[in-house]
Amino acid sequence: MSFSWKSVGLMITRRCPLACGHCVTRSSPRVQGKMAFEAAAGWIREIPRVSRKVCFTGGEPLLYPEEVRELTRLASQLGLSVSLVTGCGWAKNAERAQRILAELAEAGLSQIVISWDPFHEPFLKKDLPLSVARAAADCGLQPRIRSTYRASDSPDFRARFVSEFAPFVELFESQEVVAMGRARSLPPGAVSRTKELPGGFCPSVVLPVVDGDGRVYACCGPSLDAAPGSPLVLGNALEESLAEILERAHSDPLLHAIHAFGPRGLLSLLGAERVEEKEFSGICDLCLRLTDDPGWVARIRKRLAEPQIRFAIEALLLARKGERAQKPRPVSPSAIREREAGAALAG
Image 1 (cartoon, rainbow, N blue to C red):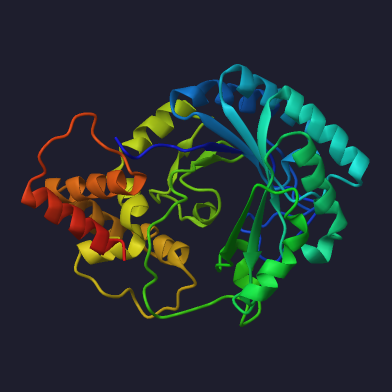
Image 2: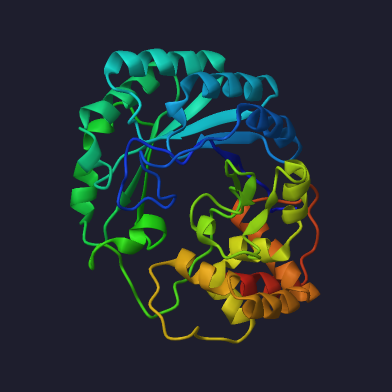
């Protein structure tokens, strides 16, 4: 099957030294609570059944560096690739950054993703994330910079904003802010909005995350705002096995379809060209609008039960991943048509 969990995220805490205006988890210094260490360790022991990777996220996971270090060691011993997302507010200075990252690298951390953009800048001087990036590179942690920009930020501004990180960073990732979480309160102009249905597939629905209260979400971010009963809320790992939750969700054709051709593609399956009058800030906005509505979900699931639709989804995912059958086999004209139909649905 071409749909797979690329990584499983553990949201160590929603607490963070920063309170960025775009934060999808609404993290801040005022948020209390954290994931229990023993619960996290138990979930890590289950993850090898469903994925090869685990990612520690938040909030700011490195508010608890000793616990994250020991969880990293456990995950590494189980053969998992371990990554971590940080906003750098824990670092304080270059010496502390070097020490903590060296300990994490020794425990088995393989990659660190540093969040740095205009939304983080009011809370940190740039030299702090630069120190973290430099230390991460020295420790062999393949640092990446993940940035979120306002709709009004020009390409030149975006390039200049992170240019000083270039000597240390393996990859720059960037995206435009969407009206999720705290970003719903951003001023006009910060977020692009359109009445046109946003197209494109979803790359995030293969990155489930476990919150500190045990709830398991299909993606790290927008699905945290999902309504009760949404298919994006996969279960609660304090009430049943995390591996069983993810194995069950792995067979959900709705998640496959979101990954294959996105929420606009779901509407296309129904011959629908619009949702009620509303402006959208991106595919996450449209996805929540559809998956929060039991009526839309029921209609979509009925359509997804048709074998030719399931085949089109699988064909499109296989084509996107560049997978090839071990043995060449003839492809029928109908199979070609189904693949082309799937690509059209993805917009």
